[in-house]
Amino acid sequence: MLNFTVGPVHSDDIVKEIGAQDVPYFRTAEFSEVMLENERLMLKFANASKGSRAVFMTNSSTGSMEAVVMNCFSESDKVLVIDGGSFGHRFAELCEIHNIPYAALKLECGKKLTKEKLYEYDGQAFTGLLVNIDETSTGVLYDSEMIGEFCRKNDLFYVCDCVSSFLADPFDMTHCGADVMITGSQKVLACPPGVSIIVLSPRATERVINAKVKTMYFNLADMLKNMERGQTPFTPAVGILLQINARLKEIEKVGGADSEIARVAAQAADFRSKITDLPFEYVSQSPANGVTSLHPVNADAYKIFELLKNEYGIWICPNGGNMKNTVFRVGHIGALTHKDNTTLVNAFKDLQVRGILN
Ligand SMILES: *Cc1c(COP(=O)(O)O)cnc(C)c1O
Image (cartoon, rainbow, N blue to C red; front, side, top):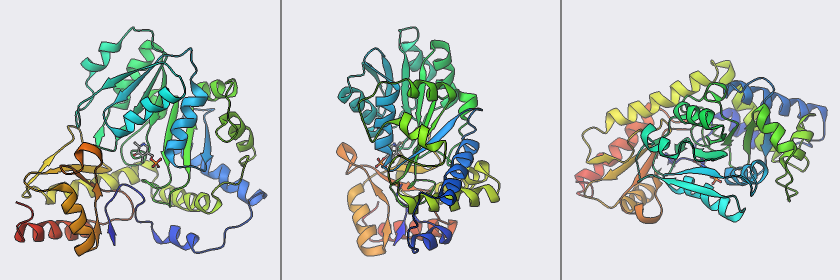
């Protein structure tokens, strides 16, 4: 199968080789070293400020979104949720579940967040802001710097879900002033799903340590305390953490975050340049590098997904909900090449010849 979804994605050989090995015991100095190196490289690639910390959660990234909501906010907060799609909506649902007062800034599908729209919420006694920097359901990239400026002005605790944008689009945690950055193993890190990483600024670290939170598994203070010695309170997904280590070191070797971002950007640009003659409309006003959301003009999006999967051995990413039949997404993350883009575009052209796309 050729995989153009937005996760899990193709892994490179180094990552796959580790996946074929036995999983080692982990309460060892050697594994602690790996974990501390993972932390160091994550902080570097996010350009986190001095004194920032990272924790490695054994859960999918929704678990980390929930852990952040639980550990960083309380009933005395009032947070603003940027709700421009299913991932933004997830933050609103989490606030609802955990009784965090919130307001949702709703955006129409595919629309970017303008400064004008955001500043309608200026000076309204909010205490925090939650945003998915790439709203992966539509592929809209929000401006982390513009939002950061708003947060600074209003003294908001700023949480960035960068699950699909970390290492795909430029993100500078120090410069934009984010307090929390979340990402996951199965997106641009191109490892199996199961680990999610939370980077905490010094201010976030302090907040988490002082939080009174009723949870054992999602207790970030406990995670931070264990991470001082490169460990986790409970058995982590050891194999995936070793794969993440190999991947981070490999990215470091070829030039760091910027080189990976450039690679993903080039993969996206190549695909977009090859579909100019196809009957597709862009869904996103400000497309992220990691994914292209497309509306096939006179065809059923879900049918295209199924035909590509069943007859061409190619996975694209279907959309859910009310976009199921109108939108599909093509990912540009993982071990894909420009030649793979050509294979996909040729399959689209074949669907055109067959009269399915027109
Ligand atoms: C993939 C993704 C998540 C996490 O989804 P999981 O299924 O929990 O891994 C969260 N936010 C965004 C923006 C994503 O792209």
